[in-house]
Length: 84
Image (tube, rainbow, N blue to C red; front, top):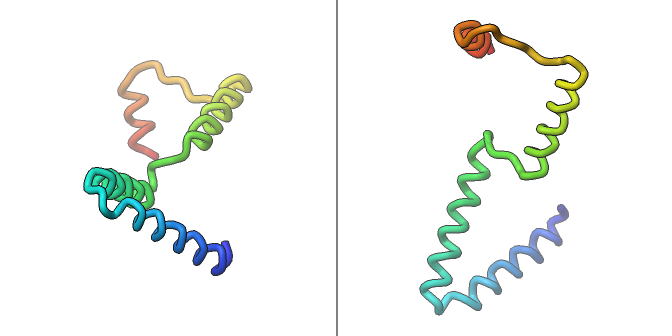
């Protein structure tokens, strides 16, 4: 994204905030939403819905091609998981 585009988005954001600044309920909702966005940015384990379904599809293909690990009991599975 170019600096010009970023500046335009920044301006639009502040105009939108200004339009709701006199409404306490909307400002509370905006604050909660902004906090959620910050958490998403900081949490590397989160993924988009598209990424989630892409990974599911990829796993299905691997399974169909016989590329998977099978465990005969939970202890073997736990040892494998701990080795990762």
